[in-house]
Length: 426
Image 1 (cartoon, rainbow, N blue to C red):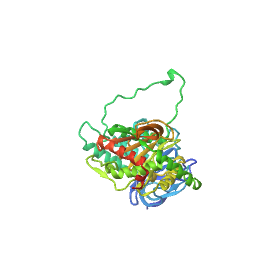
Image 2 (image 1 turned 180 degrees about the horizontal axis):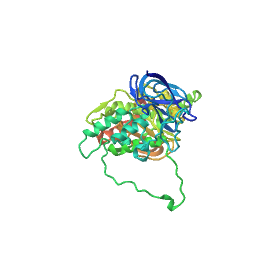
Image 3 (image 1 turned 45 degrees about the vertical axis):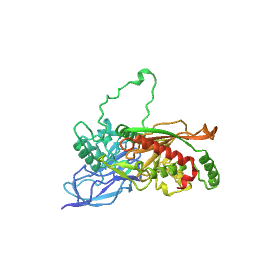
Image 4 (image 1 turned 90 degrees about the vertical axis):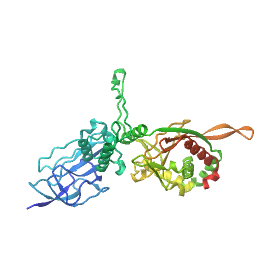
């Protein structure tokens, strides 16, 4: 007679309260030994918890987002075949250069072999996916770096891989679903140590993930960058007055709060910039909401939290939210939800320096605004040169959606809004 057995989280080292990021099975599923029951993610690795024996899923005790530790009850399975232990060894897929913990099997039985994903030897190593999805992609011959993840934190799901394959099959011969189809030489392999002392430093997980996305965006979107300068003399004077007024409330009024508001007004005036191409590339999805991403520099790399409904908020509220999300990003407390739903992005380097730069579009958005450091310049006004505080703007846009004339009109209108404080109230 079949026996219902508990399945527990096995020994996963010193890790506690590890988040569950994927539960690929449901009640009633027939599972085989070593089949993945759920996936955990530490700060160093993604780990599969496989079924310790064949059987039928009777009850699932955890869900995505729950946190588990050694010995946590995760499922009950009606076992078939020989009795085995309740906890199974964990298969880990490394996400950083640090070694991933490998779980020890319960001493009562001989542990099943732990398989470590060999995908790290390919370009797919930088993709954000669980070991089970990596195996699935490997079986189909899919390079995960070309797949857009729709799961939490941009994770690649099984549906994402299947949709990628469908799109690839639908593409004309000689093209790729990733849209780049480029025939380029491979990067040279150089032994730099031949020329002098070197040090190897692993990229952070954030840089690995964002790097793959940036590369995809750069090669698949035809970028054009429009440059403009905005006279922010009056805006800066008002910002300083407002900052002094709210300093006692610990609210820092930054120029970026004004940029957000001005961008929202401009996006309403130019709706094609507040849009995205659909998957077919033949239709433009116009958004009735204005959520703007803000690039935040953190010790581990660039993160882009999203400020929602910018058009419905005032300068002080925007400044408050900016301070909160920036702190969350730097303290590694930002969530996936905080970085989703953006329509447009602002990348400000004004606090660092520079006169202009070419920001890379954050797909599926169609435009991004770069802001450099403002400086005093002589401006011809009313028959004489007068000193004015000028702010450099760099707008990169997707030329498939936006032509040069529209790009110039957008930056010109944005500069007018920034130079005339009354327009911020429109």
